[in-house]
Length: 147
Image 1 (cartoon, rainbow, N blue to C red):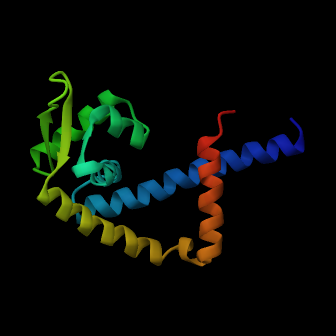
Image 2 (image 1 turned 120 degrees about the vertical axis):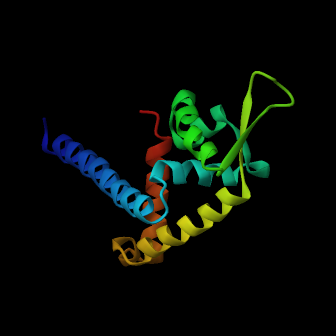
């Protein structure tokens, strides 16, 4: 491998390792304080951003980068705890829709506050607004890259 290739390889693994470490930090904090995982928080957040806070499992899977079956498994405990409800689609009875409940919205607001507190007291803040915007743009470019 060339030095440029090695550098990119190292960069990719540093990026992935960092993403995993950040996710684990959020996961531990949310689980300890709010009783939900970071993955569950992401599902609730994406659901809250859908029209009428309602989405199909396929749409949720697309939004969080999981398979529909993984989303189905992840939604079960959220439904049991009353954070979401499921209902049959009016357009297609074979399709079920997840809907955020008032209890789920309250949990999401509370969890968002915890995440915001963690972000403002972390290295993210040291990036400054311009650095945050640049990093965000570059990450979106990487996300859209089809190579």
